[in-house]
Amino acid sequence: MDKTRDTWLRAGIEYYIEKIEHYIRVQVLQVRGVRSVRKMRPDEVMKREAESILRALPKGAFTVALDVRGRMMDSPGLAGMLTDLETRGAEDMAMLIGGAFGLAPEVLDRANMRLSLSPMTFTHDIARLILVEQIYRACTINAGEPYHH
Image (cartoon, rainbow, N blue to C red):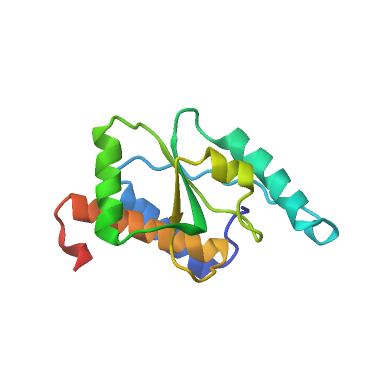
């Protein structure tokens, strides 16, 4: 939701985004998290976050929602998915990471795909780092470069 505060995480995320930009165009959109979360029920927080997320989504983007109940995929599988989207002419892809309570049902319903990074729970900042590293890895796999091994 909000910007990454930990400098080491922010540096890692920026590092991989810069590397990804050698292969594909990247734009990171972060929506502001809901304030006064402790005074609200989780479903209220998720509903407000959903409104911001859905407003920020690029029109026509293939949307992947990170969800612990989503499809598990290995790195070559992610590379193949990116290739398939490119082949089908998809111009934009949005990867959505929820806040503390996850993504609201309306966001999950809007997604073209649900993807799980792991059955474990990560902070959204750690999920961002894992996700950008995996996207970079997928780009190198598709380019036939040795990073994957």
